[in-house]
Length: 338
Image 1 (tube, rainbow, N blue to C red):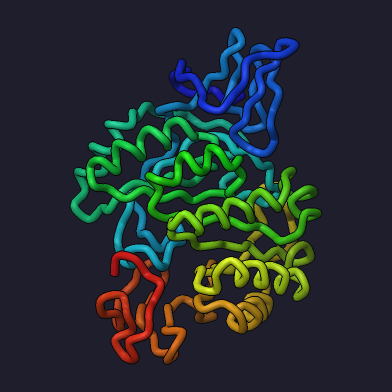
Image 2: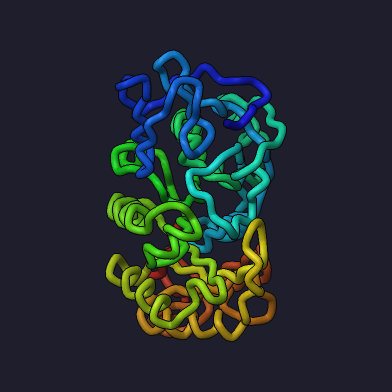
């Protein structure tokens, strides 16, 4: 259980009344059966008196104004800024988690109601909206759901940075107020998810397919870890699946560095370059992250190959777009807000 600064009495969505004293949470594929006084795997949804409560509703650990490229989202309002919020907990337990202090441990929180979050977002003239990120936002479901609705009414954008581990009903209910998301697809392999993340791969792929079909702008990130998901066969399986959904989905391959419980060596740049080459055979937009000097940051027109968005680190400059098309050849470019 996480200890928020102020325990929430917000009742959860998507749960069934107790059977044998256990509440059934239906938010994510774990389908936790939660005993009195206990929480689910995520540590933030608690059975109190036969009612499931969202412990961290309106409780935040992190508030930052970030470049949209940091999410990473390269095809959504490039060069813009977005107010980014995080809380506590996660419904996966990745051995390599980069944000384990808030996802697997406990930190102090502060109260920020949905209206306060929107008010804060509107004070910054550079800001386009709210990003729910840092830990897993889908276990913060009620807060994200309520805040995103208020933000949408105020004309702000809503962005998720998520592991995609959610059931179909909650996902479909949330999607109408979500403008874009980056989904962390950790591997195509069920064994990888089972051994390193304590979850399953198939629900994450389903989330991507549903969100994309619903018209949400979806980008994907794959953290390549030496010895675990870096084999060419694994990379090809992932790329083939993405291409089957839509070859225009942006794919980010990111360099791993040792973190949390995993001590594998950092990803060789050559491995990232191999992933880039494999993906470019079938996908229109491929990027490399967490690595300096390897290229793979710019957006190039799939038709003529010209650079239409130039990037250095988290800064972006739109250089070749006109009305959603390549300024050089007129080809369609899958970018919103440029």
